[in-house]
Amino acid sequence: MDLGIDDDAALVTASSRGLGLASAKALAREGADVTVCGTTEEHLESAESELEAVGDGDVIARQTDVTDPDEVEALVDVTVEAFGGLDHVVTSAGGVPSGSFLDTDEHDWYSAFDTLVMSHVWTLKSAYPHLEASDTGTVVSITSTSVEEAIDGLVLSNAVRRAVVGNVKTVAREWAPEVRANVVMPGAHETGRIRDLIEQAIDRGEYDSYEEGLDAWADPIPMGRIGDPMELGDAVAWLSSERASFVNGASIPVDGGRMRS
Image 1 (cartoon, rainbow, N blue to C red):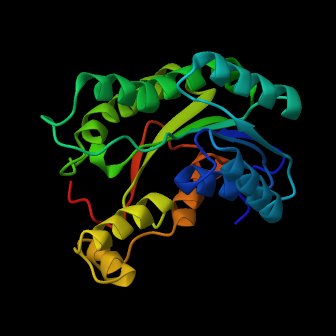
Image 2 (tube, rainbow, N blue to C red; image 1 turned 90 degrees about the vertical axis):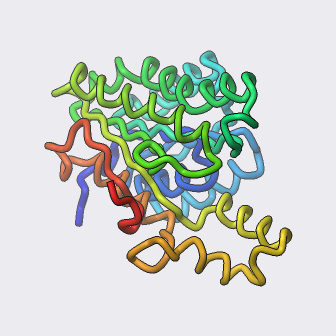
């Protein structure tokens, strides 16, 4: 299916690895020019090579701290200058520490808010004039199924990510029809974060092998497996395209049917 985003300009935050990178790859594969960002130069170099291998568009890989509003604004400016505009923004953010409510201190709350919420706010504020000027402006925000169903031991994700959903629901009404805004809520996908969690569980003696850990993660999922990151990326690319032109203000789970709500 041709999504019709060939030669469009896209910016994906926190995208040197994981679901952000998968989203960038899906957009690049459709012919979009794509900017990715991260904090680790080695990861950015790898991401740039992967994007150039899957698409014919231009690629920018820029070291950026998305919790610094000046760096976010500079990232948007570089993208617009290089690509001649900005059509699609995908907001993502790195994971925040796990822990229970009583084990989480005040600093953790403020840090999580900057990482998950303010990075999204600063990106949208900087990007809006360019999205509004585009004929196909879209926002897709990657959150988590935790915004619908709390996950044990992840109080920061459960509580703080919901603010992103509330903001997307708001701008979906305020910015339409010029700009559409939607949320994807990924469940478990085989990213580096999941691999690290399984390896840590093996070290603690909870699993005997990586395969056993994968099976445990897949157990509550009706599809019988965890997701491939590109399956989330494909959903993001579709929401960014005219094929989803009447989808606005939606929160779409990509979790193999695990959520019951």
